[in-house]
Amino acid sequence: MGHKGRAALAAAAVITLGLGLSACNDDGDTDAAAKESPATSAPAESPASEEPAEESPEAGGDAAAGDVTAPGTKLKVGDRAVLPFEYTSEKKGTIAVTVTAIEKGAEADMVSTFGEKAKGMTPYYIKMKVENVGGTDLSYASLKLDGDLEGGAGTGVILIGDLPGKCDRESAPAEFKTKGASFETCSLSATKTAPVVAASFDEGDAYEDEPVVWAAG
Image (cartoon, rainbow, N blue to C red; front, side, top):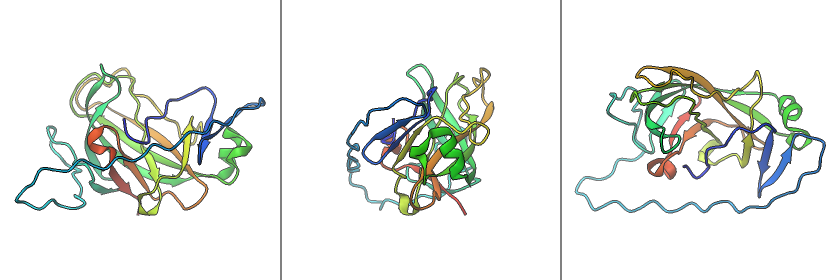
């Protein structure tokens, strides 16, 4: 799991902001649960090598089926990354992800879905196509990418839920178990400050501290 984690879908929409103030979209009172942000661990040192390490590897978008995009790779919206993926201990394989758009939504849609505590939040819709590259059974798996601000900082907002009709997080269909199978989905991000300008994949130990990033524009 990445340091930002894989958010699970829930029947009620939930927002976690700052130190963990959570809000449910219902009429009852909810308790504020403070939780510390997980500390980012320093990346492990690599063994000494005669070859200097390359910085910011560029697009591995057209990697062959047996190759994966290197951690830390910087891509643009529209580029394709081939990535190792583990949804559960039984569902793991290799997928290709193409971020097709990072779209700005309306604050009113956030408020109507998440309630008054979403006031001042601007939603962003990270739309993507996901392909089964390895041909393993990944049916019903789901993937979430994180929204990033300029410079790579996270938004500080954790969302559980989606915006129906605007940004629906779809699970893989039952047929997503053969090489070449694909589906489209959307990850919802939101910010109260600067705009979301990139999307990142940080699942798995190799990508936790060096995510693959798709930048808009």
